[in-house]
Length: 470
Image (cartoon, rainbow, N blue to C red; front, side, top):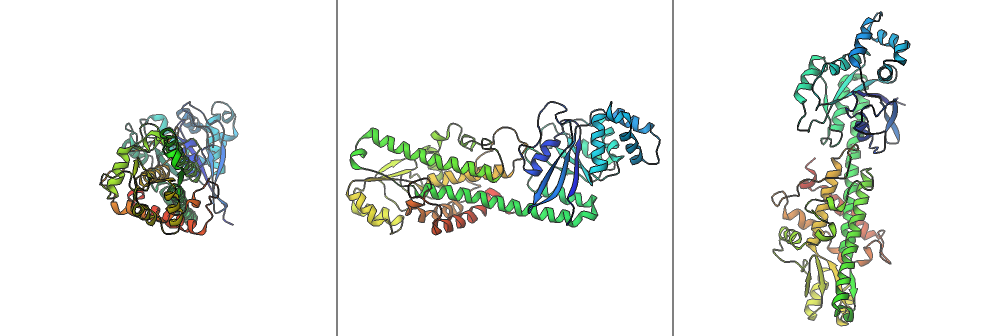
């Protein structure tokens, strides 16, 4: 069996070493991340497991603190080679005294690693101490891959660091923001490492392939969570007896209860998405979804947002009338049908399929009112959940605080065809209230529901406007 690749993570204090490991291993709880200098005081190993096996064993090391003095001391030692001088240093008293932290780093690189990833905070100027760090690390005669961190920051000195690395004869490098990695940068990191470890090229290629497959599976699982939530909401159907419908307070309470159940399904979807991407349960809130500047409770049913969603569906300014349905009472994102005529009843029943026709007719004739979610609401919910998927897809596991999403998709970036397919795919769910999870008799195990969920998830994952063409 192939031995795991062993990588030492090295660099200056607070450069982002532990943060890099959290992102590469998807372990939000690994180590301590802090702005305080010297947070990591000991070497600690953490594994990247792929297909049930350890593919890479990382060693998180303390920060280098006094590299200039260390390099001067190493230069005074007498040995046949630079690695031999490092070994002599590690055996001596200074490795347990003045340079205790530096000794832990050099020992990990020399004795425990096949190569090193040198994490560099590009916001820092290229000072002599950083040049000394690089030179001292090269004395171990192990391949070093510089990892340029914080390159998106406004004060990043990326070009200065590129030049400094060239001057140190380190020509291979990778840009990797540990908080918000560039798409594909994780796989690029391992691909570039293969140029430094030719004997491990096939092993690294297998890691790249496995990571690409994992990313694909995560995205599909996330889209399945979104699809499941949309089916839940599309299948929602609540009945209100005629006498209660006539009571304005009871009618309002009825609508509020329906909206709360929609939010419950949305919150469940958010929790599922965080789990898929291995984030903490409180790493995202519904209020962080784009366009929702206040509480989700207020804005999910905001008529202006629903109006825009309706326009993208080709419904113009209509709110309160779903695709093919007839409603007599219009509410933001909801259809509450009073069934003024039998013809309207049949029209509304046909939009959800013939199966529930008799029950609908019976309810309407008895004055029972039914509340369902409309197409614009489903589109809005789907858009926001998919935007969250995209944000989590690009979020590093070292990120602190909750997800902050960017500007919402514009009309130019969105196509009516994409949204139409999303909504059309939910038509069959409208005729199956038993498909809603969390309700008496509700089940997610129905074969037809699972088939729809699978088909919708695949369609969502193929939406280029959210995920690109890759």
